[in-house]
Image 1 (tube, rainbow, N blue to C red):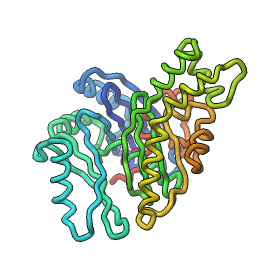
Image 2: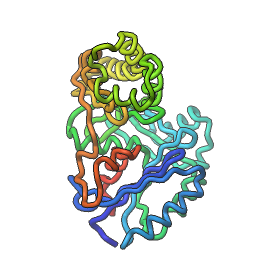
Image 3: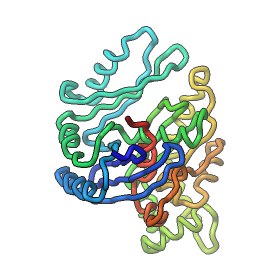
Image 4: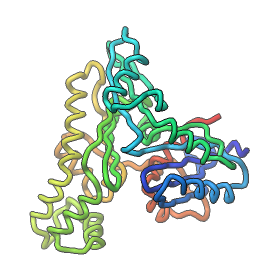
Length: 328
């Protein structure tokens, strides 16, 4: 087995993507990448077969998941004298109406003042066993984890020792997380999506989808000549769930400053970064330093790959974060 290589695989409803990375966990080199649309889980076996045929040697593999229908995650706060494990199992069963004997449960905790902050996730054992068998051949699976865990690891390497309020936007949804020192202190799903921003902006702009995407990339929140104010009002309206979600978590942090400390910065990731000057807009509204950030900046690109191709991947940041997990 090539001990310098690591394979990270992102699995979600309809897609599976993978990165092959070599070198040290800090500033490794992306040497290969794969993308495949899938209609059924069984097609993952075909994807793995293709990977195994491409790989020269067995490789340590981290699989990261997101599936609203089967992957459940939640954040809980308990007292230091409480039985954390018992409480997690009780609360997951209550919140998601699941049978815990049918699910894998994983959690990590952090001391927050007089309390313990716990991020917990669960995943059906039946689906987990299917994936464990599917990821075979030259793939040596070391860990399964959620997208959230992969992201917080990457955010830590970008901003070590900072308290970061981050929002990752995908095609159809967004996730907000508060992280500090490799720990998750808050997590929240919001109804902001790149698709909605493009479609609603196209309606008022009266342009095609490709032209609207070009407008968002080149002008965004900068006032352009000949563009009616209604366009910017629509963009702000679509962005409001993101702003409100960040504000609610920020207010939560301020209400317990002695526990969480202060937020050092807001970080925007994923598709929302396609909008020019969105960081300046969010910073002005929240009065918090805001930056667009890209986890792929943590890696170099090997020969034969281009950033243009990598940017077509839906979960590139997640994959880079997953690849930084230390494997044995």
